[in-house]
Length: 169
Image (cartoon, rainbow, N blue to C red; front, side):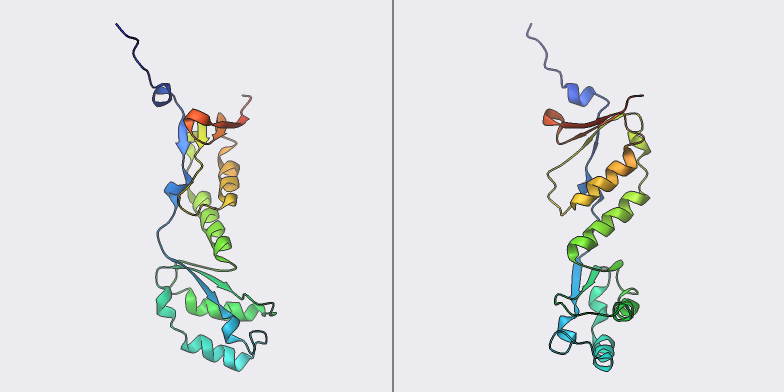
């Protein structure tokens, strides 16, 4: 009788955490205000307020929005605050920054709100190679959350995991 092949990974207590599983649905949109500025550089309050008032804010319904200015203009804080008063009622999340910063903040919020008690005392593999845009900082936020409770941490896949940490207790 031939030796039976045993899948030791499937039979182990190894827990895989895939940040891609936590990726929230919803379009990501950037609102670049450079075109609302005189010569893409000078904010004229009256004109800026007019742009904000007449902008189609309904297009941001259910989306994640990054308010940004892609030029070197100095934009006062009140300008982005004004825009947020229009965007917040429609969007799931509004930030000042790039789309990458938006993604990072989304993940920071999700990880902070997620109960990871299921990894307590377990060896954990944090899956890499995401097909969705998981920002690098999301992995750090995850480590901050699970490091105190996991038995060990690895990165990658079960067949080729890179050890990161082993709890001494």
